[in-house]
Image 1 (tube, rainbow, N blue to C red):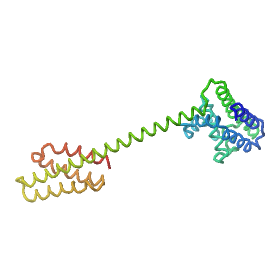
Image 2: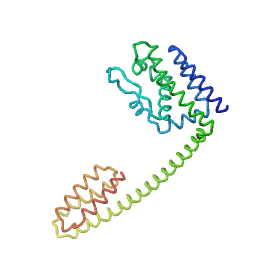
Image 3: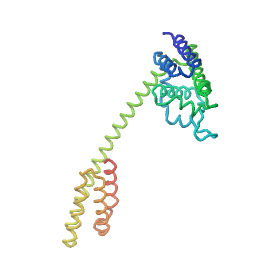
Length: 269
């Protein structure tokens, strides 16, 4: 199908929707969405618009509370064609899926005088006509060569996205490998320091009771390192830190070295 035919089909369905009565709105929305889904160029156009589009955030921005009535709201026109197409397309999909009750939606955001006809007319004028006109303008620019073909643009974006995802995955893999290396080196270094501590305690002139207590605390920290339990490691380290503070000369400079190594290990758990 030629791009002109795709556009003409869309404009025909959009025109039927605009000229239809409220009672036929659901059918006309389905027909319009089907036209988009079966048009490669239109589908690519909308995919481009929907990329990185935050619908939930947009609803808060474009469907606001009315300053005149607590139970009513207002539709605020998006400033760009991209936002307009993405937002209204999502609204139409939600209506078609039953996530939005059209009657309640019209009564809340397009209320005029209480009549369904007036609300529907306001909805058509505020949402559907600008939606149709934006698609028409963009598609005609594509047909005239003023704008890149949406299919090509989408494919380029997909290629770019995949490339970026692959680069990100590779970087995450490298970072994980670096972290594992830091963890392994820190674990080995800490075990070496704790063995040195036990030797110092054994060779010190402390009482046997003090030697026993300090050795118990050092062993407790060494034993929990393989547990992958951050709380247990923190608890054991606190006990160790206070114990060596009581013997500053024997464990001179130990607190700073062990603190750094414990932090490196905990960060990887």
